[in-house]
Length: 91
Image (cartoon, rainbow, N blue to C red; front, side, top):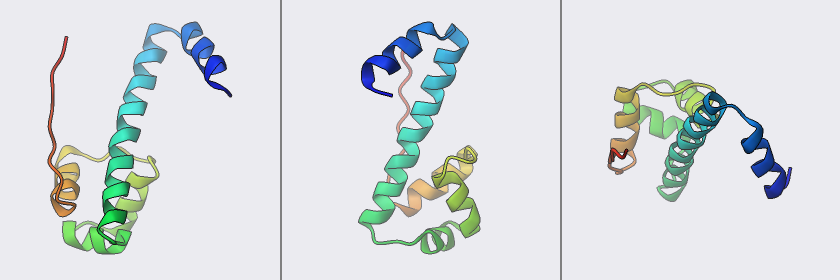
C-alpha cells in the first residue's frame, strides 16, 4: 500500500477506526523508541528484562506489539533504558 492508498483508506474508516489506528500508531512509536534505545545501549532483551525484573518473554511480547505493557512495566523499562516518560495533554 502506498501513501495515497493509505490516506484513502483512512478517509473511508469510521471515527472509531481512526481512533484505534491513532492508538496503535502511538503504541508503536513508544515501542520503537524502546527498541532503538535498547540497541543503542547494546542490551539484549534478556539483559533488559533482568534490569527490570521481568521475564525476557515479556520484553519480547512488548517489542513485537503482541501485548501493551502496564504502566508500571513501561516505567521499569524506561528507567532501565535511562529514558523519561513525559505526558502532554492536549485538547
